[in-house]
Image (cartoon, rainbow, N blue to C red; front, side, top):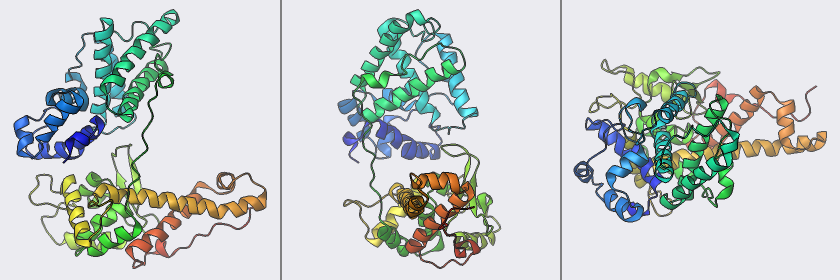
Length: 421
């Protein structure tokens, strides 16, 4: 692991994706316990301390508290590092709203909390107090307050490593002030236009992904139904590794008309994931596991885990083993489960673009400005969804093989060739 090449946001992501599950297995609470150097060294992660000190000017403790945001299990016990109770109450009220009304995942809230705490601490250091609410009710003080906040953002520019990280902090702070304005606790947002004052640019996304041929090779390398489902879950359903690891049979609805997976909580809120391919494999997996009297419902059960199912890093480890067996490399490296999951998104985007291309001729015949107009004006949402799913299902069948025979995969939904009357 080349720790020195990782930005702070990448290190933070590594904490939640890899370090936190390991802490949980060792009986620690990753949302309240900062890991010790000795424990990190035991796991082979001692290099993180050197990288934090030499590249980012932080001690591990400062990183885990100020950047990652580990604190007590709930915001009430979090050490904000400021004394102004009204600001702390406003922060906690905002975070409570994100959790209860917007359904943000627990792993997202500590990051937001860290961003707000850092802003308030720097504000206090620069301006002698951290009473962020004092000047927000008087428009006459707006220019001065904007200047005070911009000076805090100047510190973000100096302290944070990448533009992406700086923009993430700014987005959190701006959303907090928007919340105050929306609920009439402030008359203006002092950082509403702050992004215009900086040359921070959102870095180009890492579009590195696996090709259809590579996913097919890994899938064909799988020797068991369990291994095939692992690849299907990532590339065919677009699930996150942790979602895949914790799948339970009760989440599946395998009816022919609308097979899907239901989630009570996801990173972006509750929802369902359509099963466009692989329903027969799921049925076989559940039937095979149901014969075990001790089976609790986990699609990927683990007898060594207290949870009863495998861990997120196990998904990644098993996938990399399959990729190695298949001899698949992406930029010379063994692809991760994340890259396999990204295949789903790039493939779905291509399917949508293909659908739009089919509508271009119809748009021209009707004198419409674009295919998007045809979609929005002449096709119902149900029809649009059916077209998208058919296009995606065709691509998935080309990757995984066309061995399924459920009624949905046999249904052909065609885009109309003329305007509906």
